[in-house]
Length: 251
Image (cartoon, rainbow, N blue to C red; front, side, top):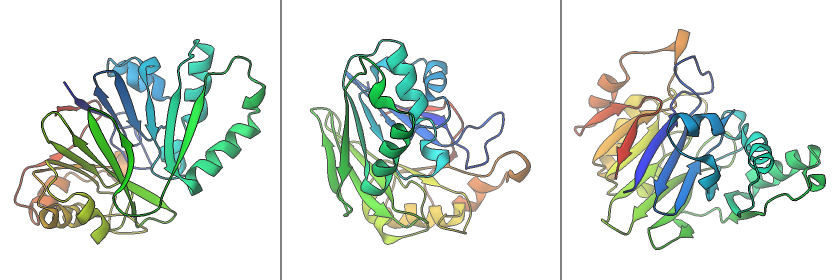
């Protein structure tokens, strides 16, 4: 069974109940994670997932609330004896910087380090980034403060479609990326600075013909708003869920 896990659902200002937004998709012999924040190893463990089974890591953009955990993940996996290949996907803007950070850590001198393959994605809509017997993963550029991507996953076993906006202002690119998606995960950080409000996310879901809208990357703690679902329901007639950390969806 294919299972999506919300490892974190908060925006750049997490609290004790919400980590920064990142996701995991568990399926057969592969484990895919979208973004990697703080101590993703611990988050995966809390979700009942073995981090050493991670095969694919997709990085949506180079902001610390989305990629700050990459060095720790790599070091932790190496020290725990990982030997299998890890694939990391992202735009050149993202991966160039990730590699530079790792150079500052002098990772080339870490003995017996496991193989890591970087896949620099084409910055175009519906780019086929990864294809396996279980699914196809597409990426599209979205409209954030820096180069960023959204993700679409099409499952082979049942035809289900999952789309994730990533951090973005409302845009037609996400509408096209999420067209006909059974599940649309959309950020709801607010209508400012390359982000989207819950109401705008509802509009995107409606235009895309999405089945179920899940809101993530929302304000928490002192900035919490308890009306995001109601706000999205004003513009989207389908089901709306405010995702919570460690919530999961069986696809």
